[in-house]
Every structure is written in structure tokens, then in C-alpha cells.
Image (cartoon, rainbow, N blue to C red):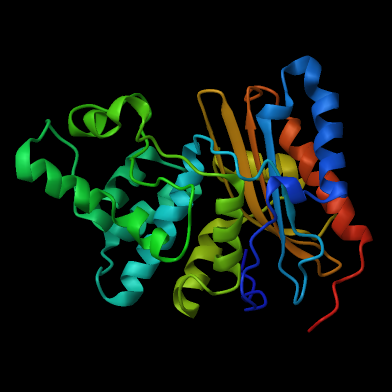
Length: 308
């Protein structure tokens, strides 16, 4: 799927705080919790963030529990992608065939092995036995490069300094977790902002934006065979959207969490970011698609926000 041109370059308006959740979005959250409560979904297990990307389109932006931190699972890989593109654009990193292959597999296949290689490449750190003294302090400083990049951009409630593993971390990687206190974390508001900045070309220049959108693009409304397992979450949610919808997304599931964040362009021209984070219903596949369908209904029926 060809990448869509960047959305309006207007500054990103942060989604409202929990106390400012729009009534229509709160109603969707309440309905979905009621529908799936018998399967384990609770009020505390659902967060939704929406950003309207149309020019002047703050009217349908909002969040429900968008400021609550979760373990992000593979959604964190989108932040590694953005940092990789920014570092490459600045001249601080040069592509090799292996880096290009690993970045693709990190996003398209959600490969944890590829993610570990990308983390090594963008931070100058490697896994291995425990370190001590100045060598350990230097390693930790390098590994926090992604965090510093996003902190300078004003991001909060984000920790993006850990590799992802299929089984477990060992050696310095396990020690760096600090008993779980230093695990990756984020809110749905934070990742919604990232997707909005990618779509608007505000994270990198045109080349990096085009690359990111191409890697994040998902075929969601056709019945052709899936390219890989990573696309299944987008496909399940995409089937509940109008025919002709275009979608760029990243999902993540691990332990008891299951998330999907997407930039969505509907046939009527509505262009928005939707991040849905869940906890406690990882094995209930219909929760996230239900939220996607309900939010898309709102954008399908609402007139475009007036241009400035």
C-alpha cells in the first residue's frame, strides 16, 4: 500500500486530560466495558485516545483514561522507529542492509530479535553479562538515548529504553529493568501524539515520514492472505471499518495487555489517530475492533471540522 501524503502540518493539540473526556467517547468506553464485562473487561482495563488530524480538527479529539501508564508491549517499537529515522536524518546514523532489514522486520513482523538489533544500532549498546562502575554508568547513559530524544520534544509518561524479548532478559538487560521499575511504559495519549506527528511530517522530514508510513501501512479491508501475524490485529479492526479505509498501525500484546494504535483515513476524508490500550482481556479478540468500529461511526457521521 502506498503511503499517504502527510496530514495537515498544524501543531499537534494534545488530547484532553481524563477530566475533559468528550461525552461521545466516554459513552463508547462505557458501552464497550458493559458489553465485555462478563469476559473480564473493567473500567480500569481500557484507555482510548483520539486525535483528529483534519485542519482545525480538535473538535473530535479526546481521551478516556489516556493518561494512564501501561506496559506497551510491541507498540514501543514505533518509538524506536521514529528515533532511528530522526538519527539517520541528522547524519548520526548511516543505513546498512542489515539495519534496513531489521527495522522492517521490527515493524512489519514485530520481531523481537530485529528490535534488539535496532536498539543496539541506535543507542550503541549491546546485551551481555553484568557491568559495573563507570562502564555500567556509560552503558545506561547510552541506552537512555531514545528517552532523552522524546523528553526534549516534550513527551512525558514514556519509558522507551528496554529491548523486547520472546522469553526473558538476562545479564545487564535484566539488571537494567531494576526489578521491574524501569520497564518500558507509556500512555495511550503519548503514542497517539507520536502517530499524529509522524502523519503530519513533524517527526522527521519527507524521506523519513514516507519510510515510516510505508512500514506502518496495513491492508485491512481485503480478504487476501495475511503477510504475517503482526497484521492480524489491524485486519480484525479494519474489517469493522468502511470499505476503502486506509490504515497505518502498530499493535502489541504481552502478559495481560493488548493494544492497537492507528492512523485511519476513512473514505469520507476523515483522518484521525486512534489508540486503544487494554488490560485483562488479551484473549478476547473483539474488544479493540468494537472500539474502532464505534469511533469510526462517529467520524463517518460527523461533518469535517472547519478549516482555519
